[in-house]
Image 1: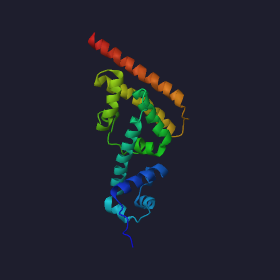
Image 2 (image 1 turned 90 degrees about the vertical axis):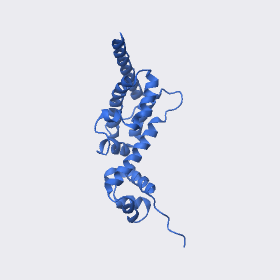
Image 3 (image 1 turned 45 degrees about the vertical axis):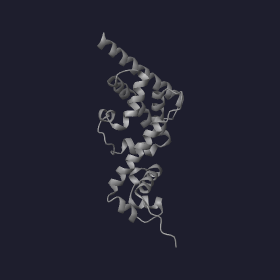
Image 4 (image 1 turned 45 degrees about the horizontal axis):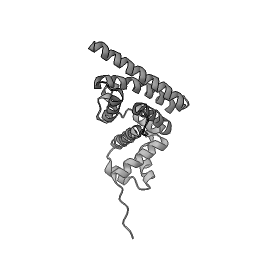
Length: 193
């Protein structure tokens, strides 16, 4: 008789992410996760003594997936607009994961300013800084403007209150980006001049 397959912590986290994807973060529990894995609840409870610790681990995994998704901008596309559109597109394609990330209370940051200073945002801010050619402080301000706009669109779409019109949203996002860059350039000019 072959040995039983070992259920690892990573397998459990991935199963919890699948539960979120299919039915929402509220449904993460030992029974739903073990059902996803087709095993007893014992391995789930062995690796995670509380369901909250499992939800936090699943949240980190979803956050990582979201960051990878956002940074997957096709060559030749403006990285800033690509990142913004990917943020919105993620809400379209993965509404339950989007809810988990931004509407569940599991985020580490308590404010947008804390999020801007998070380690996970470094590659996104670096791409924006390169695209804008401005200081990091100005880039942060641009990010806040664009992030609020993109998050607003994504939230409305994820909550099924707006149809995803990629062309229209891309035009609005580009206007937001251009306006934020123009405002930052004017501020920088006033400061230097």
